[in-house]
Amino acid sequence: MNIFQTLEEKVNVIPEKYKNMTTEELEARVREIKNELGTKLYIPGHHYQKDEVIQFADDTGDSLKLAQLSEENSEAEHIVFCGVHFMAETADILTTKNQKVYLPDMRAGCSMADMADIFQTERAWTKLTELFGTTIIPLTYVNSTAAIKAFVGKNNGATVTSSNAEKMVSWAFEQKERILFLPDQHLGRNTAFNLGVSLDEMAVWNPINDTLEYDGPIENVKVILWKGHCSVHENFTVANIHDVRAQFPEMKIIVHPECRREVVELSDMDGSTNYIINAIENAKPGSSWAIGTEMNLVKRIIQQHPDKHIVSLNPHMCPCLTMNRIDLPHLVWCLESIVEGKPHNVIEVEDEVAINAKKALAAMLQQS
Image 1: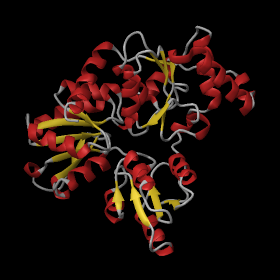
Image 2 (image 1 turned 60 degrees about the vertical axis):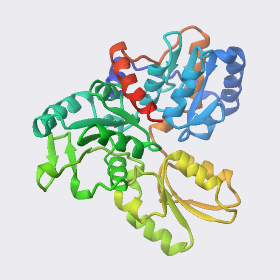
Image 3 (image 1 turned 180 degrees about the horizontal axis):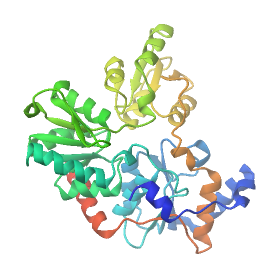
């Protein structure tokens, strides 16, 4: 089930009283509830969340790390995930039946994850196996729905993160001759290229018209990239790089591998969110950086490192709009619903889906 289907089934509109509360009132209420619930409450916050929310996170990190921390936090009965829908799904998959996972605003989805739904994926798999037989193994970025993770697990594939993508693609090539990489074509392309797969050995599956986009001999295909992308990272361009080079010749450019191939190729460094954070933390005082990733995180890094000159690679970039759905009013509304015994926005993954999705996650974790 994608976020739009979820919204059709259960839409809860935030009461006006939360919109009318002052920031001070909202912050005070979060503190009160955190004190009241103690260790029964756990609030993981993704790196891309607003500062108004991240200040109350018990842990910050990427989606998989936060889901794993939720799993480890066995005392927590209520996990209020400040991120997006697929992240809360992963937390629900990994936690126990005695734990409930909540998403403060059900509109907080992920455009990339929703670019590959299960119906499109099953149609694609049927056609691709007709073309390539049993030579394909599926891999999915953790930025995907539970249904896609389950499909991958059911077909003996694995999940990947931006940190371990190279390791997992190498593992996949040990299993099969070809890879179907879902749902982010840019991470798949950049990762495979780094491992020596040439661009002319990569095809693109277009889920809109159910076609394989490829010009060469079909037998040469090694990687099939799903035609999906991150709406934030795709907005970093070659023109942005040229502008930075012209204005700040000494500045280093570091980008996320969800960026387009040509942007990654022209950058000085590329890596996961944690890679970017660590690179800036370990950089010399006085060094200059242009960062190609989500704006909330870039602004936070700038604040944390006043001894360095840091800018966004794209100065006109907006924060991730769906991440920004989670705000203080929605967080307070969610927390109060728990305290009142009338919780809403509970994320529940069906058992069969969870079992197969966990299989895909386990296949990845075994390689870690």
